[in-house]
Structure formats: C-alpha cells, structure tokens
Amino acid sequence: MTQAQLGSGTFRPREISLLETGLREPVSGAIQLLSERLTSRSTLDGHRGVEATPLFLELSARQAEDERDYAAASALAGTAAEAALAAGDPHTWWGMTYLAARCLCTLHAYRECIGKASLLSSHPLAADPGLHAQAETLLATAYQGTGELDRAIAHARTAVEGVPATGGAVFLEACEALVSALAEAGRLDEAWSYCRTFVLPLLETGVDRQTKGKALWAAGNVAFRRGDVYTGLLHHRAAAALLQPGTDVELWARFNSATAAMRLAAGIHDDETLACIEHAEAAMSVVGLYGPERLEPAHSRGLWLDLNGEHLRAVGMLSDVYAHRDELSPQDSGELALHLGLALAHTGRPDAGSACLVDSEQSFRSAGARDRAAHAAALAHELAAG
Image (cartoon, rainbow, N blue to C red; front, side, top):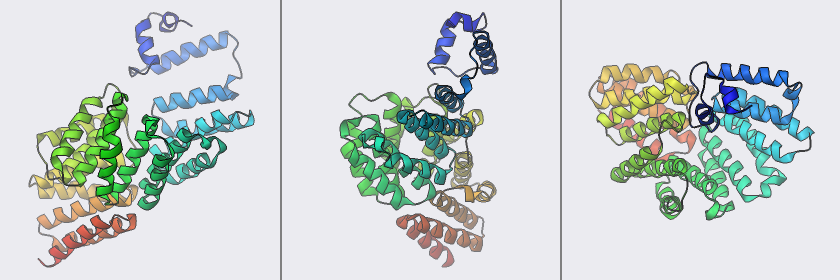
C-alpha cells in the first residue's frame, strides 16, 4: 500500500511518513484505524498464517515497544526468539532476546532480565565486542536495579573494557552504566575520572543528540553527587536542551524526574526545580511509567515541600511513597527513608525520624553504598542526641 492509500483521506502521506519514522506520536484512535486498514488489505491479498513467522512476531514486538506496552513487547520478543531459534536464525534470536531483556529491565523485572542478559553475554555471537558490551551493559543496569552495586560495577567495567572507545553509542552507554553504578556506590572520584577521560571528550565526535543528552545527564549526576553543583547544573541544562519531549517523551519524563531529585539533594528548591517536578508529573501522566518511576516525582515533591518549610504536608506525601518502598531499589529506598526521617524531625517527632534514619542506613548498607550509610547513621546519632 502507498502512504496515500493507507491514509485514505484521513491522513495525508506526510503524516503517515512521520508516524512511520517515529517523529510523531499517533493521535487517539489512529492505531486502531490504521491497523484495521492494514488487516483488511492483508486479508484481501490472501496473507494468512503470517502470525507464526519470526518476522511477524519481531515486528509485533517492536510495535508493542513503540507503544510502550513493555510486557507485551517482552512476551512477543521471547516468542520471536524461539521461532528464530527453530528456524536456525541465531542473529534474530539474539536481537529478540535482547529486546525481551531490555523490556523486562524497563518493567523492573530485574531477575528475569539478568537471566536473559546472561544468556546473551555467553552466546557465541557475543564474540562480537559490540554485542558483548550491550549484554554486559544491560546486566550492569539490572544489577544496579537490584541494589547489587558491586556486581553492577563489574559488568559495566567489562562492557567498557571490551569495546573500543571508537564504539560510539555502545561505548558511551557502557560508560554511563559504569559511572552511574560507581556514583551510587559512593566511588565518586573514580566515576568523575571516567566522565572526564571518556564520556565528555566523546561528545565532540558527532554522536546523535539523544546519546549526547543522556551522557551529559550522567556526567551531571556525578558532579552533583561530588558536591560540584555548578558543573552539575551546567551539564543538566545542556542535557535539557538536547532531550526534548517531541523526540522521546518517556525519556524526557525520566530526565526531569532525575534532575529534580539531584537538585533537591543539593538543596536547590527554587522555581526551576519545581518546574522539573511538574514536567515529570505531566509527562508521566501521558505515557504511564512503572514502579519506581511513578513514585519518584511524589518523592521529589515531598522533599521540595520540606525544604520550603511545609513540613506537615511533606510528611504526608513522603509517608505515602514510603508505604510503597518495597518497589524501590535499596539505594532509592534509603534516600526516601532519610528524607522522611528529617521531615518527621522537623515536625517534632524525633523518635519516628530516628527509626526512618536507621532504616535508611540499613538500606544503603545492603546496596553497598557505604558513604550514604555512614551519612544516615551520623544523622540518626545527631537526632538521638537532640
């Protein structure tokens, strides 16, 4: 079918082209209408039984991912991988297994993701440095999600060391995973060294806007954690200019949420920080995110309220998030417990605040974030001492 035939008076060819290339999100009802037209045409042309082919399953999985139905995308990709294996097509098996694992990671099904990513890492096709780096980077991300920071660092380091620095986006993503895990573990000097040596210089080599934005985001996070607020703001603002909602609204939501959290942790609770929270909330209401992502803006808003002197409202909001802390990684749970503990102390409830700070210390310690654990313990001691 031509673009004009598919549009059939409802959509102009140019609009169909924008949908096909992913430059425009479909309006309400467009997917159903276009699917009916395509299905009708396929039936008329006699294309029956196509649902069983690896190609149909692969396209269906990618379509589900584009529509952010990650559970369906993972299931379809797994079925496509099995069909490709039966057909003797290892390359499609690898690609579909990787897609399934990546979707599982997005859904925070980290253990299942680790299982699939481990298969990829040990597969003969992983003799290719780029493919091996992708699998190891995914393992690093999943292990960071489970709070096993030492394992995350080990896999990310394997990814970085296994692919040449000329590897473009694959190498940069491996570096981002490594600096993120190092920063979470409190190894900030080492994380910043990777940023200065690899991440920031590579941004001048012609990488695409989105890859560059994500790298600047990662470098800004490390700068904030090191206490270099000026550099953190500089990199995050540069990233904001590159990561736009019209390109990827879900990534934009994640970025604004993370930026707000970093700014608040640095004590910046101005209108720009509030705008980041509001951007994240608005974007997430559109795309819908899973588990921790939907809790992060509420966590940030609660902290923003506490820093602006609205302690009772802050306790209420943070307590609501705290009730779902089992959905968070240990390190994120530790941050939440720390902020709730301080908010409770500000409302004149030191005993409840101390209990949260003890919980914070334990969460950080279980993740291997020793510096943060020591910080929480020191705060608990100060509170207990009045």
